[in-house]
Image (cartoon, rainbow, N blue to C red; front, side):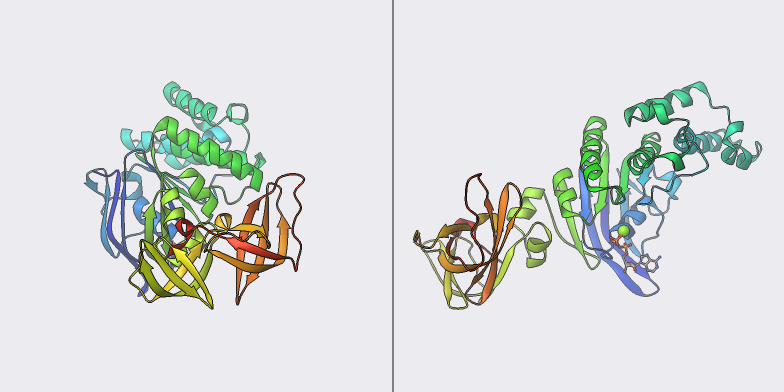
Length: 373
Ligand SMILES: Nc1ncnc2c1ncn2[C@@H]1O[C@H](COP(=O)(O)OP(=O)(O)OP(=O)(O)O)[C@@H](O)[C@H]1O
Ligand SMILES: [Mg+2]
C-alpha cells in the first residue's frame, strides 16, 4: 500500500485538459519530486492531492483511504507554498500556532461561540494551552528559529520565512508533506543550504514528502525518486541515477542534465554492438534497437577530448574547438564535428592547458556511453 496513490488523475479547466491520466504510487517515508517545465501541471497535481482542486476524473488515496470527497483540512496534508503564504501581521510563533489553534477550536466545537475571528486575527488575545506552546517551540527549535519566535514574519529574511512556512506545516504532524517550489525565492547559496536542511529533516522525521520543482538539480540531489512531467503527463518515473543514465526520451535526456542529442540511422547490429550513422560518421553503441531512425544520446562528461595526434579506437572523431569555458574544476568545450556541434565536459587539473578556439582535436566515446533512443 502506497502512502500517496494517484490513479488516472485528469483535470480540465473550462474544457482545457491540463492533467492527463496521472498515475503515482508514492511509498511511506519516500521523498518524491515532481519535476517539469513551467506550466506542465505540477502545482495542479499537488493541489488535487491536497484537496484544493477537484479532479475531473481519477482517484487519490492517502494510505488506504480514498480522499476525493474530503476537504483539504480533512486530509492531513501539510503544504508549503512557493509564496510561503505567511501572515505578515502575526509573529513567527502565531504563524506556526495558527493551524493548531484552529484545529483545537474545531475539535472542541467552540469555533463560533468564542468569536473565533477575534481569537485568530488578534493573536495578543490568545492564551495558548501549555502543550500547544511547547509543541510550537519544539518545531521552531527544529528549524532553528527559537530566537525569532516573537518577530513579525515581515521582519525576517527569505530563508527564515521559508523555515516558518516549513514549521507551520510540520507542527500539524501531517501524514504527507507537500512542498511547491519552496526554495524558488531564495538566492543560490541559501537554496543549497535549505536543500540539505529539508532533506535531513525529511529523513529524521521519515515523513512522506512530495516536492515540486522545475529545477532538475534540486530534484536530482534531494529526491529518492523523481517523476518528470511534460504537458500534463508523466513521461518517466525513476531514481535520479535511473533517469540520468537511462532517459527514455530525448526530452528527459535534455531536461535531466545536459546531453548531446544527434539524429542517427541504424546500419547494423553485430556481436552486441549497434552501428549507427550520424551524417557521414559511424558511431557504435551497446544499446540494442529495432528502429531505423534513432536519437543518439551522449553525456558531455563521457566524451574524451584528445590532442589530434592521439588517435584511439573506433568511436573517435575529428573536431574543432569553437568555445572553451573554464568552470573551475571542469572545462566545457563546444566543438564542431562534421555538421554537428558537441559539448564535452573535461576535468581540469591545474597546470593543464585549456585548448582554444580553432584547435583541432580528436574526440572519443566508449560504446557503453552511447545511448540510442
Ligand atoms: N485555476 C486555473 N484555471 C485555468 N487554468 C489553470 C488554472 N490553474 C492552472 N491552470 C493551467 O494549467 C496548466 C498547469 O498549471 P500549473 O500551475 O499546474 O503548472 P506548473 O507545472 O505548476 O507550472 P510552474 O512551474 O510555472 O509553477 C497551465 O497551463 C495553467 O495555465
Ligand atoms: Mg507551479
